Each structure stands twice: as C-alpha cells, then as structure tokens.
Length: 178
Image (tube, rainbow, N blue to C red; front, top):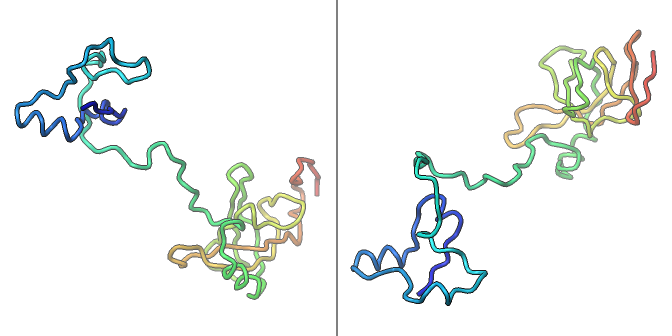
C-alpha cells in the first residue's frame, strides 16, 4: 500500500495512520517495489529527504488560519448590513469636530459637539470631495459597531466647515488652501 505524504506530515513528523498500525503489529510500512518503478511525478519517500537535524520540534500546534487573509474587523459601508444602514439613515443628525483622520489607515475620530467619548469614522462613510483634517466641523449620523453593538461609529459624515488656515486635500489628490 502506498501512502501520500503531505507537506504537513513531513514538516511536523507525522506518519499516516496505516503506518502507525503496521509498525505496532511488526509489519513493514515501506513499499516492496523498487525505486525504478516509481513515476517521476510521485513524491519522494520520507527516508530520502535530507531534512536539517538541528531543527527542534514546535511546542505548539500550527495555526489553522496561517496562510489565509483574516478579514478586517472594521465595519465599512460595504460590510454593514442593510438594516443597520436603514437605522442609521433614519436617526438624528449630530454635529462634531474632526479630532484626527489618517487617509493611509482609512479611519479617524470625531469629537461630538455635545461632549462624550470620541466616535470612530471609516473612510467609506465620508461624503463629499475633501479628506477630513483635524479641526473640520462635520455633521454625521451614528450606528453601532458589531459584534457587541456597544461602541458607536459615525456614518454619512459631511464636512460643513473647513478648518481655517489648513490645507485640504481632495480624494483625487489636489491640495486646496482654506
């Protein structure tokens, strides 16, 4: 019986189940056929691989998510549910001041005019042609951030007054002085 050896088995020194049972009963697990009968596309046998001996075994199991992209936890306009979008659009309009916004990171924070904790804003929720700058007056609506729905996020953010004496950039990259 021939066994397919996966890269995982080679890397972490695992053996096929049949190999473990046959070794326990004293039977040989190596195929009796000669090396000349193997096709050129078949994987090499584990005994013919020259693995470094100085490598020690891992103390923890490998992550099942290694090699996969983990989705961003930031709720964007695109990932927001329809019902959350409807609830936000039907809510009241609030006023505040842009505390900070980083275009390269794609998010920032708004300080509410009536006080309270700063509110998160994502780049996809900004309406208009200008990138927000600290000190810009904005209006916005709010919706909750999943999964616990304890924190708030600003949506439908509109810059009402540009901060005086600052340079503003449009989304296309043009710089405008205000």
